[in-house]
Length: 97
Image (cartoon, rainbow, N blue to C red; front, side):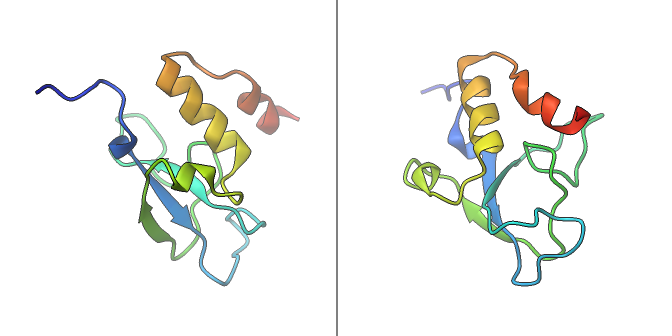
């Protein structure tokens, strides 16, 4: 049976360590990151563009974890856009302001 083109297996969740370092998200948020590294992509950033914490806790993504209240809304929007095969526009505005 062929795998679908889009799958939750392509992503992982990260939880920041207890020390929210200066380069990571400053909130108690759970972020999504692509499991496969892409050529020309940034390897130290989450889907929403936040830098990875120093010692993230890696978690598997499943439908239940997507309902977690701590899940970053930008990461969720990007995931949903990728699921539909479209490119999100509004998270890019977050970094241009």
